[in-house]
Image (cartoon, rainbow, N blue to C red; front, side, top):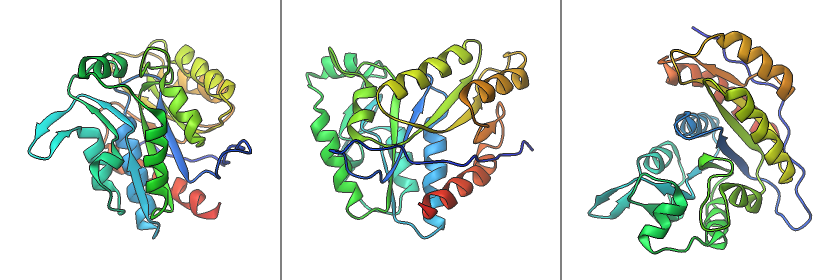
Length: 247
């Protein structure tokens, strides 16, 4: 089984108008790289350490109609891993039926995304929770309306970022561009996880070594293709939980 390690992490420096960080923002180099599984694993580990934790999915595109309304699979996964109860609308303020880019889904639903509403929901979660784990949608600059992107949500929340790197051809460029963008937005890369999503991706170890050298820190975890993700995330999540408790 692949060994998971976790580097020394630090919370980012908040601007004077921001409240101190109370969680992490889980970003990805793209969609479908494992953000939800990693966020849920982290929530469960923090809960086992006795912390009150809540997951949040600010915007979800791709949902099923239920008697209670639209429900997104990733948001439900985060709720199941949380030990703080919250209304679904607080966990997932914007939920759209079509599995497309958030800005297209919002337009088709006739909804204007209000980042202030997302920030308000986040603060509602921080009241009963020690930490809130926020999962983004798509990549760092995924559009959420005609002008704003997922980065604007991350910047408004001001949380340290855990970057999930989907290991496939092009991941070096995607990871380095994402780091440059998030740092330009005034946020800090707290850690990164390598998620092997393409079984045909060649030179995995060489690419991981390049990422560690260029990103300046070892991978918090490496998830092999079709591995027992739950077991692999156990160690990495517990290490991050130990760090979060010590802050």
